[in-house]
Image (cartoon, rainbow, N blue to C red; front, side, top):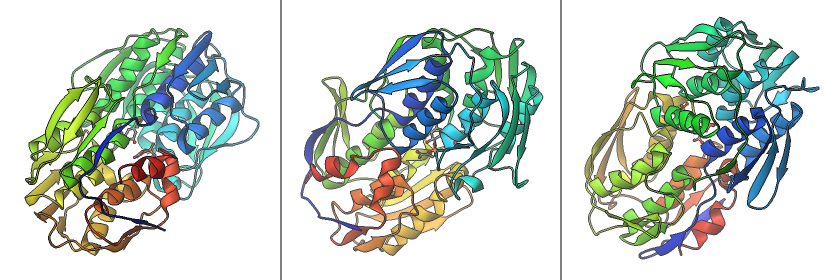
Length: 422
Ligand SMILES: O=C(O)C1=C[C@@H](OP(=O)(O)O)[C@@H](O)[C@H](O)C1
Ligand SMILES: C=C(OP(=O)(O)O)C(=O)O
């Protein structure tokens, strides 16, 4: 357990580690490319280690240096893994690598931690079956462990049934160029977390494959092709930048995150303008985004369907605002590392906040933070719970974070960087 000490006003410039989402996409595109790619500024964390280890099991050599990784691409020819693939609680990799392994040959399992065995993957399995993949959920739950008998994907038309993760769409797109025939993908229902699909299309295009699609991201035509090896530079992680912007917002201080660019490929960078709507000042200095807090924050009403990972950050800031904050379209928070919708509200309540929970929304009744008091915060093995509630501790004495090591999933050096704010 770690106790956070309150500070007056933070005043800092920080550099955050590389984007988890971009690192994983670039690793996969580079692994399937014909030739050797170099990833500059990748994220070294528990999740990206699971991804690169799984790719290594499929015969891809990933040489991990201090600030760049060299990936020896296979041109799409994958070796059969000798052991089952284990991906911890890495939802992105579990969804993406299910399709990647389908490109290879062999009979094996994909599995993860207990929580990953509760995170659905059924819609992706159905869409892959439409491309001729023999895949089943071992326990019949529509969740991992999965059993695959891979022999490549046929391509042609497939349909992704309605689901609560954009990762299914990204996963299918990433492998579609390697299908035996040109592929199309139709998605039933609304696509949540859309910026992540845009990010996938951007990485694919950088690696040389252009996909045709509609604006709603429900209809895609993917040409056959092979990714082109390249040198790819990774932006700083905007979801992880959120904790530093939030620190400025609630302490009335200043934080510049130097390596999240504008424009960014990451939807979560849009948290900064949202904090500006609550009363902060935003400016673009030296290539990064600076947030300055003021004495007063106002509650807002906002649809966060496109920015699920920064909802806990926003909810914590909302507890220090004046008035009601209503966060809608967030049912997908319930299938993250924990049920983040409930967990966030449970822990805010423990700190004295007045909140309301709906199936797909939350309400925080802010009073400027006056009612908040210290508490031992449960983190449910969820890195985003630990990092968001650490922010609250900068204003409220006695905030203690249990299970603080869970930050290793996406930001192993978080506590050192956060400590520098004080
Ligand atoms: O594609 C990605 O890199 C991600 C997509 C999002 O998931 P959903 O699409 O399931 O909301 C996000 O929560 C996750 O952290 C990363
Ligand atoms: C939801 C997250 O990741 P994943 O789905 O990859 O486990 C996250 O990092 O907040």
